[in-house]
Length: 101
Image 1: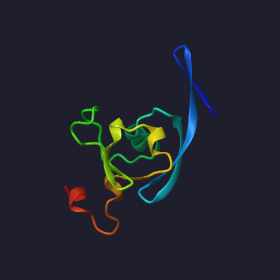
Image 2: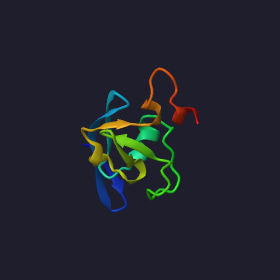
Image 3: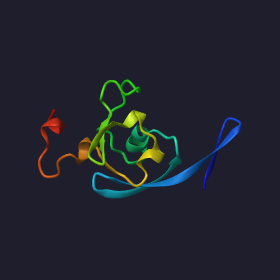
Image 4: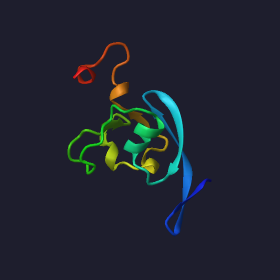
């Protein structure tokens, strides 16, 4: 495991596996890393937006195992082994009405 310094405390990175928009993905991250940050920086899926950061506005809405969730309030350890669908993964052939908007 990779160890990163966080002030006086060492923080261990772990490997997390998840299915994102139908593709198996693996990421090395701190267990409490926000899913929104992983989606945007590690997977370059920028359709999921950061706005309020406290789960009120819905700009970071995603599906985890087909259930609506806020990516800004979800930690990496919570999605290990789960399926995530972002706005980019809603429709494959034609743009969904939400994607068009």
